[in-house]
Image (cartoon, rainbow, N blue to C red):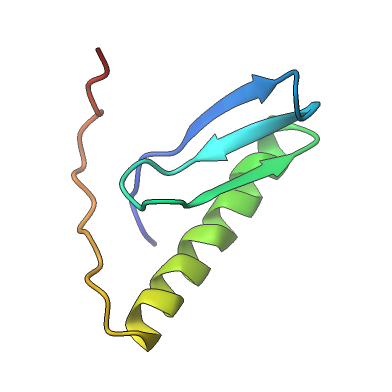
Length: 70
């Protein structure tokens, strides 16, 4: 199991919950509930890593700590 931080929030513009994975650029998902967004984010993480391996791109290791935002 990957241990990347996932941030889930409600988006009025999308009318859905958004799940972002800040440590993996461009990796995000959405869902009608927080649980759906989380499930879809886990799938997105696996696809992100699979694609990075396919193209020999670097895969960041999970930091294991909460990211700091200013």
